Length: 188
Image (cartoon, rainbow, N blue to C red; front, side, top):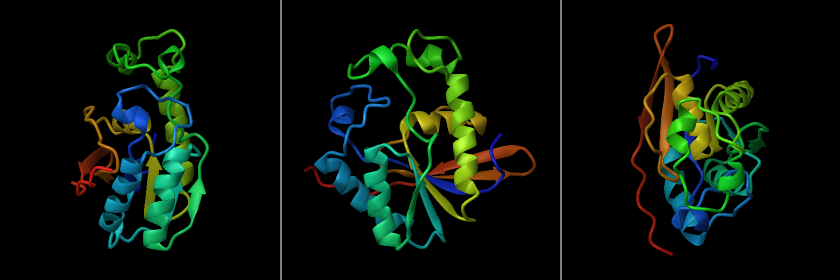
């Protein structure tokens, strides 16, 4: 269960593996030049949101994106274990996503971190992040966002690289996820 506190989520900028459609999982793939440009383009969107903390995955693609936002917002970055991307096992580095739909329905996929385990890990890590301040930006990965969507009982909707999403409780039990439109970075 997530702490009933609104927060912002930002998926890391593009990597060369994103561009070529390969599964990254826990592989510590860096941002591409286009990903750095996306992060710089998204940073101004975060100003004026009242953010007072940035928490991110320890993987370098999320750290680099968070660092760019942190410079724009003059905030420190806290690395939160548990916000890493899911372990995709044998699918790492290849462009095969045939396993994703059954995995999101909690079917066991050999070698892939089970989705119920990912959800628990992400909930625990997000709650630690939310405990750092009142207006938190979490910078992490697409699979982390899928887990958050499931925890919020929201339909699965893809989140583009560096597109901010606002996650907010509604009433006693519901959640709302709204995605902002980020300006397109110039091709690098």
